[in-house]
Length: 107
Image (cartoon, rainbow, N blue to C red):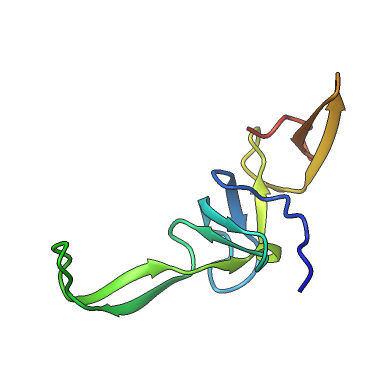
């Protein structure tokens, strides 16, 4: 698979636009451009069995977030909080990401 540029980055606030978690909001914990996936806090939760280990982690069933495809999330507009696309603006030689709906820069 060819590596494509992802417009969603780590620490972005996103909204899930498709799938069983549609409508949920969260922060991107990790971005995986090679797989075209993002890990969003509190989204796509699954239960996994965990063994006890030497660091003191207990054995049992734990809930954890799994990666979700980047096409199923949209950036949350910093101004309105609604889903928006990502655009780019070049000012004085600096390229910045902007929210398409409001035109506000994305941190």
